[in-house]
Length: 305
Image 1 (cartoon, rainbow, N blue to C red):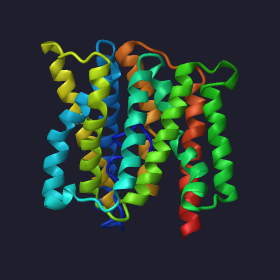
Image 2 (cartoon, rainbow, N blue to C red):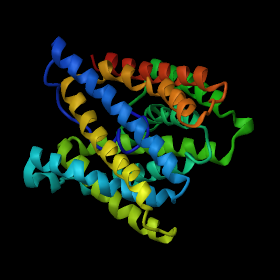
Image 3 (cartoon, one colour):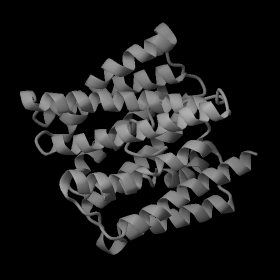
């Protein structure tokens, strides 16, 4: 999954799904929809708070406050093993790339329409296909290559190369870092469970963003802003847990179409929250990116089958 960073890549689940019956699938779909709603809520809150506080400070407090949700759940699932990892190098790559992507996302919210930014964030699976060969030795088939070309056409519709602005490039860099985080997740998930993966990511996020927040002029939030910061932390933490729970109950082929609804939902949020109209190319470009993402998923499932 690839919508706004950190919440999607922080808690992968390895191993088979627990069931494929109607009830578990319906429950997984509801969890995925709730996770998506929380991810978009967290992104919108980050944008609102980012108008008054630095991006690093907003992200640091998001990680810190989300510990109140993630830590109890992780220890309930795995006990002391929630702090035990077998591949620290992989977790370091995940943390650096995931936190870097989140920081770029939070900063870019102040410079790009919300729907444009969210649509570009869904380009991460395209970068995963391009990077999986050199990093994992996986060869992309013809279908995957065509899907990448289709998705890149969508990206270029939203951010035409002739009119690329610095923050459009930052959004693409965010998608690239998200892809690195996803690939690192695939490596670490083979040895560590979702409890350790999620908790270690959030702890690393606190450690990585604290110095950046201090260096960029950290100040205590005003009393009126604390409810928004608390909601941001709780929404982000709950999104991690719901995303992991959904993938324990259903395969990606079932859940991915729900996740891509975020492109249309972000346009609605931008309009209702800020009276903001997305750029004209966002919906057709977003549809191309969503079709490409679903196509790469289908190609991967078919190749494994």
